[in-house]
Image (cartoon, rainbow, N blue to C red; front, top):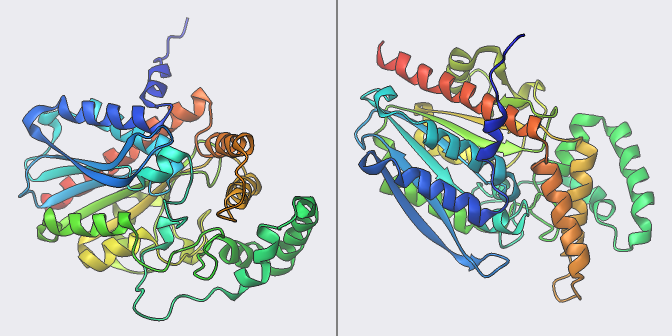
Length: 373
């Protein structure tokens, strides 16, 4: 009889809610002792049970290490189930003897704790954090195609949803997939109640992250590898490595050297993602230039059609602040969001952890190889 390794334990890294995920992350970091520095940054809001919220980070290794590996979870709150599980797994599997002397690791847990706790993709202000990293002192990015279809994305009358869906399908056929997806998800700055809204000012999470850049003196590092952990887009269970560095740049060159043909580029049309405004990638690129290689590790789940449906319905329930809230419909929306971004499937969860270990190994080997040259 053929005996294969049992992968079922990999799914045990996942938590059922934000509070459990945070507790597991903190415990795993604290178990490492003095090799790991853990810091909590309290969030001003609370979770659905009145629980405290926070961004937490764990720094392993020397503050003076010239190379740094970084992971970020829950930039899109509800996507934190997978991101947190990956970070807990990395902490649990950490071996001090396996960390090169000149390499440190930073895990940033729950960049958007409000969205994680409430099972929403946006933050406490309805802002998509991954569209918030723009220069708000100048003209805001324009997305005229979004304005043309905004009323169809969230029709005021529930009886109009079927009609709106048909019209949206017609737009997609007429415009083509790339233009349609950019219109819908590329980022917009005119509709605070709408999807993929980038905000009108830097968010709490952005301010905290930019403060960490300074407090942790990340600019002193010679090379930084960042993996931003996301779910919901692409083939079921596959972890796509998405590179939004400018085409032909050193960031792309390093990404391909470390990760090979795994890397896709939205700018070239090779990715399941399209080019977007205000990505968190750009904050790292602007702060550290050619020192940083930033990639999004995106784990696919269900179809793009389902993604848009759950997001549209989630936003529609909250589009009119002051209007009566139906707890049953809110719970239905929460369950639909969780089902899309955190599938209740053992094979999906196992695939996420396995792939994340593979990619983290590629990143640390790439950093280590550069130290030897």
